[in-house]
Length: 399
Ligand code: HEM
Image 1: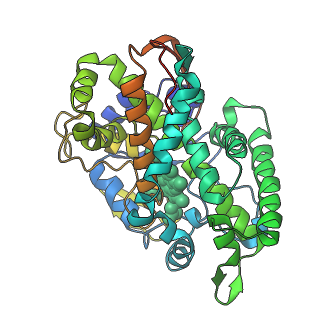
Image 2: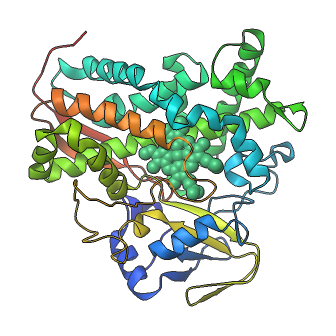
Image 3: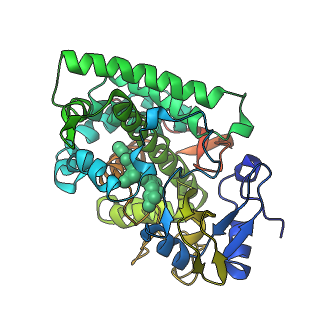
């Protein structure tokens, strides 16, 4: 098997399941060469991905969770993004934002998210055709992140475009494009700092600016790194779940019909299967802090260890008939949100966004059909369609 889990073209139609299947069967902890780097361990079995994600003592999130090491000149003033820290520092940073994302406050957002989902479908329903990714699936997460941070909804959409550039593999774009998008995000974030300091509101951006760590307020760069993380993490992940999930169901219409026959009753279980099936985050990297055995592999201190979530989610040792989309699957302990200290902070919000959009789409956009080719994000980090033209029976706007 020709193994290449780096080149973006290998992800041009989604996860490379043929490679994952081979690796799980033959080398679940596999030494993967790297053209411009020292190589890394590709971890593809559920058991090992689960173990690495929880074991922050042996597998650190520093200096980065990306396969490519950061350039030495990019130091962010010595400050770190929460995603790229370990406990106890990680615990302190996560505590600053944790409350907003707990199940109870998140539940309180349901009516507003349902209203946003209704508005999103209203905006396309009379036309009978749209790009499902940009005009439906992508609208929700950009609105939600804007509301959380207290920003105008249209700005959420612009920030979301930057997220897409940041998540595109460097090989698939012009040199410097990703760095320029991060820079633009920071420039926007500086404006947020000025605005929220001048006119504090009841939103997450204001809370972060007022928060104290070890008796001092967050430095501007600490805020900007939080801002970048929240906008990026909450953006195209949810969009991709919605687009790839709807695409998967349209390809198996009898399963979609089964779901629609009792949408409120079946959606909570079906949504978890869509999360397993689509796995929007392809990988997270760790760096070994000690020499440690992982399966048959002898990992050395300093080695890169990369968890492939989409492979773990298709592991037959964990899931019955893993290659089947089973919208009634229970139990379903997928690992799409990770599971260690860094497990997805936004997972409760994501689930509400997904449910709200799917209810509107599946009840109102009748005869939904994919029209033409679907293009995918050129990325080995985030998986999902970037454009998916659909047609449907035109309907009426709802109040
Ligand atoms: C379907 C949608 C989503 C998926 C599949 C997803 C997946 C993930 C994954 C795999 C991780 C890393 C877990 C690990 O390393 O163990 C993560 C972390 C994170 N996610 Fe999500 N995510 C989604 C939506 C969201 C949303 C909507 C938000 C915010 C509004 C969000 C915020 C975060 C944050 C802040 C982290 C970092 C947590 C930490 O470092 O402690 N995510 N997510």
